[in-house]
Amino acid sequence: MPDSSTSQELYAKRIPIVPRSIKGPFRNFKTVVLLLGYVVYFGLPWLPWHRLDGAPQAVMFDIPGRRYMLFDLVVHPQEVFWLALLLFIAAVFLFFVTALVGRAFCGYFCFQTLWTDAFIWIEHLIQGERPKRLNLMNRPWSDREKLIKVGLTRLLWLVLSFWTALTFVLYFGYAPDQVWAFFTGQAAGAAYIATLALTITTYMAAGMLREHVCMFICPYGRFQSAMYDPGTLSVHYDKARGEGGNGRAAARAGLRSLDERHAQGHGDCIDCGLCVQVCPVGIDIRQGMQFKCISCGLCIDACNTIMAKMSYPKNLIRYDSETNLALPQPKPELQIKWKNIKVLGYGASVVLMTAYLIYSIATRQSFEHSVQQIRQPLFVTLSDGSIRNRYQIRLTNISGQEETYSIEARGLPVGALDIGSFSRVTIKNGKSVIVQASVKLDPVRARNLEHFEFVIRNSQGESVTDEARFFAK
Ligand code: SF4
Ligand code: SF4
Image (cartoon, rainbow, N blue to C red; front, side, top):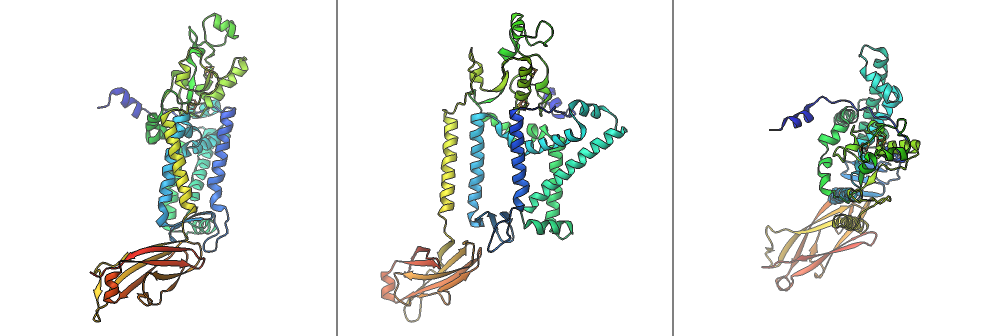
């Protein structure tokens, strides 16, 4: 049974957070990441790319053609392990970043953060700064201004959610055709269902649930503490400096300069509350590290603005580690502790896996093949006493264009290999062909031969050799 405090936390009515906007380097960095992220996400389906055998689109998941086109790289289902490896590398890289600089991914790069930021920007554009938004929020719905401004805000949220959802669908076909088909009612049912589902989830996640997604839905927020240690960088309030011996106090008369404050035992925090007002998850970082904090750095910008106005040293709130803050004189420069087994382990894993992925892509052949011996029966004795074995050769062309292959056998007498009319076979890009081959040997040769080789060549001179066994008993 959960105790009553847990029940309250989980089921209490959500109080909307209305963050104040702030200027500063962390805000600028977040804006740059947001703009870049949006340009990439919304722009990629429209980026043209020259292709010989497909839609001229740089990135496309061609489901009917069973291939994923990423610029000049075409990934077929047989190579799907590359995508699995890429996801694994991304996950380990996330662990690496978390072990090094805490929850930085959440604050700057996560989709939830990027879309919530954009929704807040729309809210700010239509309804104004925090006091105006709070004022509007507290008015009744019968108020005309509230109805118009909140209605317009939500309409723009819906448009952004819809375009986000539709863009996702555009990755699965040629974008101009898809848009035309979508708006003329000719798109596949799955396109409409996916767009509707994603529109609703985007609107709910970035418009309504916001910090609740990070707190209660996203698993990463929960398990990131496993990667965290006292040396990990995170956003901290320097309590010793901020509180002094007698706690924080407003900058009233007699407590304006640092000398006055320190003489009366007060710290550098003037209790203005700006760091709380700008926080997108609604926490007070002065109460210590909290799992809800997404390390976005906006409270650092806020506090530094105040410190500059008061002519106090900056960085009362800053990226720091618990280890450094526990020192009698914390070091002022950024302490990135990378010499520990966790960071080095994650880093080495990322480097090795990335190197393997690049090697695997760079050395892949332009075709795939397999040779399987037909084992039912393993061999057949013909009426003239000769022995016959049968094989199945599968060829898949992944060269990006139509290609012709020749199949030969090495280590067999002339005429022993029979592949019908398939000594040369032409295969379209992305397609597979299965060739049935049989090898017939007289009884003496059959008893003395155990292995021979199939040699498969394409018209570019690329070849593979595959050893095969011959059974006579
Ligand atoms: S406490 Fe600071 S760093 Fe953490 S989420 Fe709030 S504003 Fe961002
Ligand atoms: S912004 Fe800085 S000075 Fe203002 S309340 Fe927060 S920590 Fe104190």
